[in-house]
Length: 91
Image (cartoon, rainbow, N blue to C red; front, side, top):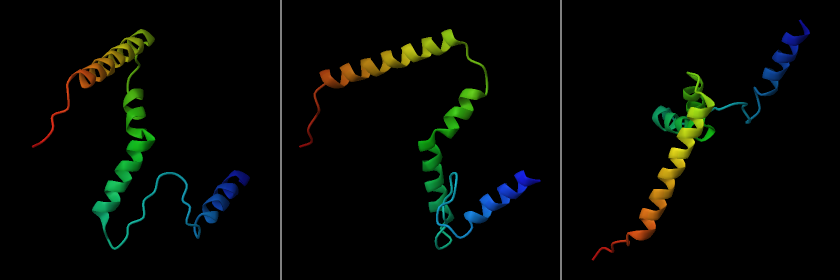
């Protein structure tokens, strides 16, 4: 029973506080679209979607290593290509 009391007190502490634990967005002037955009951005920054996708199925360590190596290779090639090709100026 004491556990539930602590949880209730935890919730009561944040009722009148501007700080809300977890990810939350305040909707101003019924602007739900703007609030949804902000929420999606926060979720993206936290990496929640990526972690959920990663945990959907088991990936062997060798496969993780192979994917990481391929991603590093792609980044390297992209960096080289960007350095070699000159930036075109608009006239």
